[in-house]
Length: 106
Length: 262
Image 1 (tube, helix red, strand yellow):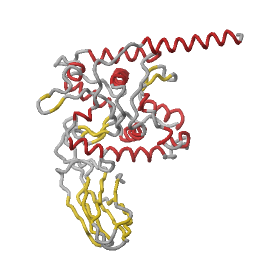
Image 2 (image 1 turned 180 degrees about the vertical axis):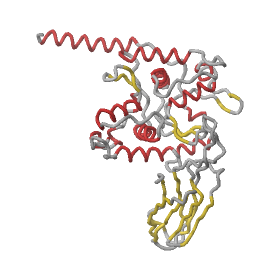
Image 3 (image 1 turned 30 degrees about the horizontal axis):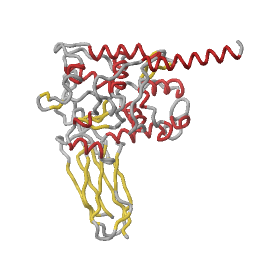
Image 4 (image 1 turned 90 degrees about the horizontal axis):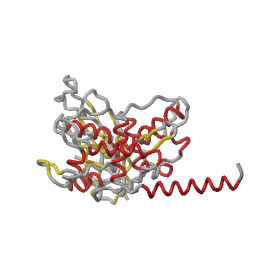
């Protein structure tokens, strides 16, 4: 499973916009490059990234081959109630990588 | 051997050591400047960000390897060394260093592999492989903020001289030495790129061009190719010697691993 790093604040006040950050270690091989022997390196990318907060989708991206390696996303989330923030990456073969962090709203 | 003679010999040994230290009148030819200072603000910010710096992915991966007990001897790095944060603090500042076991100067990657062979009963991580880069990044990152201080006297002296000669030797179709660019033209521009001093205090680095981590030797090979010279293999003694000279040349610079470069 690819290595991931996520950052969600432990606690937040209700109504606050909190910064969510997520990064995954992935080559994001675009399929247009050749190796030293001149043979094409096959495309190998992550196709989807979604973030859900307490079960509801809050952020979703469709990734394309032009993206650089180790895609990093940062966005703001309005804290309403305590719940898990789930991250889900899907690569082209359908392999799913997940990570989760609890956000407590006071 | 009587006690007085031992004391005299010990004193002589100490004097000889001091003499060797002071006999080394070598001084870098210029004030070292880290590669960081040649980067754009965006790259510097990425390096300074303790979350977004992509090199930290390798450092984390290194921590997994550090704690991994699934090796032939059943002993992880942590089994002997304990917590990497305390045990490995300052270690990277001393490498490359002379190894009595190998009887030549070895760099940090080779020291890790030596440990892996002899104490874990495993085969070497191949040079430039993901696990070797990760564990090297982890070990080096523990010395972040400490100045490089390699020993260039005693058994390391020969290696240092070879490394120095390498640095000043013109090579390749373009007939350029390392010094031609990184000493005589550091701070100037090569078309859109600024020329750094070629300091290695941030290695292993996350390089945007490679979209991944790379060791000093990958960088040396890249540079050699850039002047149309045949690169040496990663892990070769030529590159270890050069690395020793490079670390000495930037001796006051603080370790920045994992650094981000273009």
